Amino acid sequence: MKSVKSLLLFLFAIPFIFGCEEKHDQAGLDKFSQSQLVVWNRHLSEIIIKDIFSPPVASRIYSYPNIAAYEALAPAYPAYESLSDQFNGLSEIPQPDTTKEMYLPVSSIIAFSTVGKKLILDELKMEEYEVEYLARIKEIGIKEEVLNNSIAYGRQVGEHILAWAKQDGYVETRALTRHVISKKPDTWQPTAPDYMPAVEPHWNKIRPFVMDSAAHFKPRMATAFDSTTTSDFYKEAMEVYDIVKHIDEEKLLIARFWDDNPNISYTKGHVTYFQQKLTPPGHWVSITSSAIRKNKLSMMEAAETYVMVTTALADGFISCWDAKYAYNSIRPDTYIERYIDQDWDPILQTPPFPEFPSGHSVISAAAATVLTQKFGDNYAFADSTQLAIGLPVRKFNSFNEAAYEVGESRIYGGIHFRPACDLGAEQGKAVGNLVVSKLRTRKPEQTAKL
Image 1 (cartoon, rainbow, N blue to C red):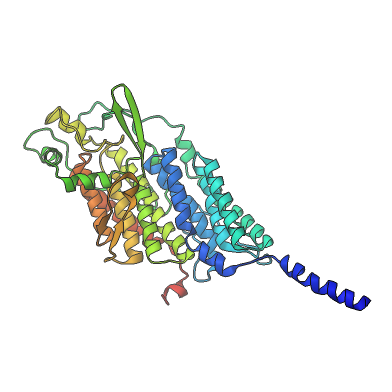
Image 2 (tube, rainbow, N blue to C red; image 1 turned 135 degrees about the horizontal axis):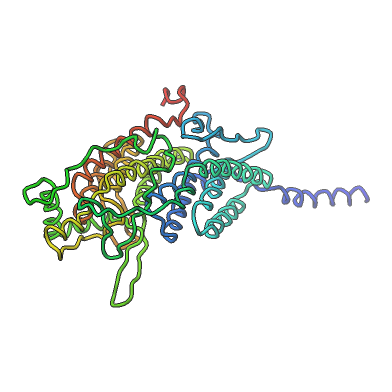
C-alpha cells in the first residue's frame, strides 16, 4: 500500500515538474527578431520627430545605435566581421563570453536601445519601448539565464559604442559660437518667416565615420555670384523664380513630398504654431526599412544594411556642412527678393543654413548609392513615407531616380539653385562610394562565395 501511494505521488509530480520547466521557443524568437531592427528604427524616428532634432544631428542619432546593433549581433554570424578597425577611432568591440549561453538578437536590440536613449531627449520613451520589447520576448519564451546574459552583453556593447561616440566632438560643438552673419552681398542671410540663426555651423568638427576629414569630398565652386541680369547666376535665379511662379500640381507635390523640414512654422493672426516631420535622413531610413521588409532580409542582413546607409547619411552631412559654411552662399529667397521681385516667396520654408550645396541632394545620393549596391540599379519601389502627413505614395524605378527627384524638389520648392543640387549629388555619390568600398562587413572568404 505504501509503495502504491509513493508511485501515485511521483506520477502526480511529473506534470508539476515539467510544468515548471522554462519555455524557450527558438523558432518563435527567430521569427519575432527578424523584423525588430525595422521596428526600432521606426521607434527612433518617432522620438527624433518629437524631440525636433536638426537633420545633421538626426543623422548622428541614427548611426550609432545601428552600429551598436550590428556589432552585438555579428558574433552569431561567422560570415560577418566587426567594423571596429574600419570606423575612425572605434576600438575593438567586447566579444560575448562563450561560456555563457546567449541569444544575440536580444543583445542587438538592447545595444541599440542603450545607445539610442543617450542620444535623444526623451529617454523615458525609449525605456518604455525596451520594457515592451522584453515583455514580448518573455511572452514568446526564453530561458531566464539566456535573457539575462543577452541583456548584459547588449549593454556592454552599447556602452562601448557610447564611449566612442563621446569622443566625436559633438559635445564640444555645443559650446562654440554662433555663425557670424556677413555683410557681403553673396553670403547667406537669415530668411523668413522665423529668421533663425544658422544651424550647426561647426558640424565639420564632428569626427567622420569613414571619411579622412570633413573636407574629403569638398565640391567644386558653383556659379560665381553676380547680380547683373545677363550673368549666369542671375539666370539660375530666374529658373527658380519662374518655376515657383508657374508651378504645376506635380512639381508642387514633389516639392512637398521631399520637404522633410523637421519643424515648420505657421502663423495665423498673432498665433504661431509648428508642425514636426521626418528629417531627410529619417526619410531615407524609412526607404531602407521598406526595402528590408520587401526583401524579407534576415536580422543580420538588416543590421548590415542599416549600418551602411546610416554611415553614408552621417558622413554625407559632415561633408555637406563643411562645404556649406566654407562657401556661405546666398539663398534664392534672399537673392530673388533683392534683385528680381521683392514680393516673391518660395514654396517651401527656407532652412536656416547656407545654400550650397544642397544637403538633401548630398545625403540622398549617398544613401541611394549604398542602397543600389545592396539591392541593384533597377530596384522599383513605392515610397509611402509621407502617408503620415497626408501625401500619397510615390513610385520609383530605382533609388537613384528617387535621389534625382530630391534634387529637383529643392528647385521646385524655391530653396536651392540648380548647381547646389547637381554638384551636391556628385558629392553624395562620392561619399556613398567610399562607404561601399571602405566598410567590409563580410569576411573575405565569405564575400568571394556570395
